[in-house]
Image (cartoon, rainbow, N blue to C red; front, side):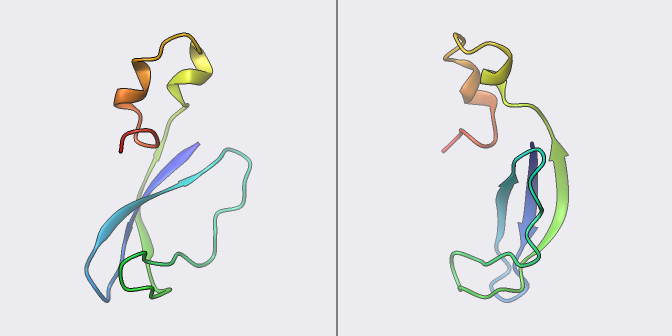
Length: 69
């Protein structure tokens, strides 16, 4: 799984997006704040979801960028 850091040039907001392993990376990213479709990836982190390794470790989600709210 990849967690991408995206940046919107219109409202200058930085936000995260997630792409599951094997899925196609979207050609267009839309900013949730200004609704513009010009957001671009600026950084990509590859990691496996902590629950994939140990589904019984319920505290592992605290360090996962896709689970942290």
